[in-house]
Image (tube, rainbow, N blue to C red; front, side, top):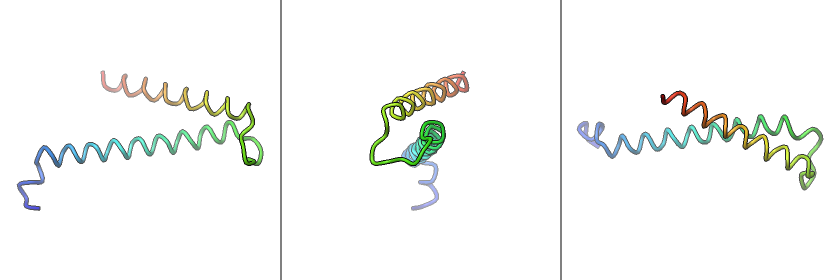
Length: 76
């Protein structure tokens, strides 16, 4: 790779895609941690209880909704 290719549009696109992947992975990690701590109160078995499933679903949905809202506000 020569110095002239460091500013190429293809490289910039690749870097932006990798940044987006890293942000998504970070969001998933935070979501998992927050929702797990909130919804799983005991020692998990081989399956989640129906209340745990509902809690995890609602928690994840709220987390995603808030993340999208924050991103939209920051882009304005």
